[in-house]
Length: 271
Image (cartoon, rainbow, N blue to C red; front, side, top):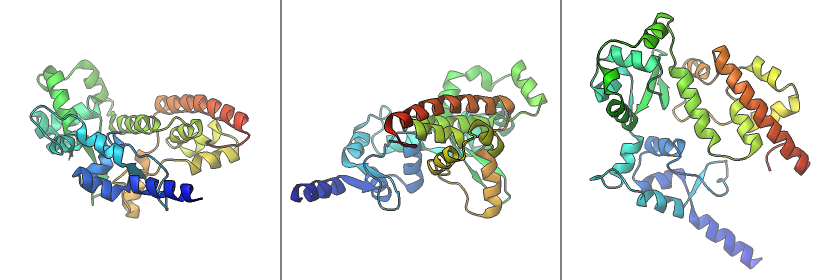
């Protein structure tokens, strides 16, 4: 009994909450949330009462000791990795192009948003990682100048906008990398499907209950005002037929593994 109490006390001391972890890493709340989202900082151990994630001292030390850009020391190097800009004008400034050209590049899928916010006019403002924009500029200097490529012209003529799809794909990928549990992975994929598509893909109501219970929470920065929530919720669901088909196929595969897991354990849900 004493050994168990001592072990629990040591575990509690070794784990810290998000606010404290952010402070020890020299990050603001938003910067820390982005670092967790990107997998730079990894949660571990049992969650705190209420479900809040906690972080080990070892993990914080690992992040602190990670190498930054040459000539840049921690925590500045860490802040650079999570720094974002919002909107076409700010992102265009990083690339050294005009806002209209940047909007075309983003709508055509050349750069992927890492997040979003909904402004007071209920318009979506996409957020981009500064580091990724700089890498794109260094990697594709030709695409920043001259006339648009034929494929881009076709997309613009069709009034395509790949930003929501690119963001969803990025978010799903990051969430899937956080877990190896088959039911949790299936829940991530299910959360992107529109309701009717999900009912067709998962006809068993009991399985849908499990998937709903394991669904990831809205991303950091998701609005609280009802009018803005209605706008943001549309971003969370797949839209185009080929995108929906990809998530349905991926969900079918994940559910096959999840059901096999349940057969081996005798229980429905994650082990």
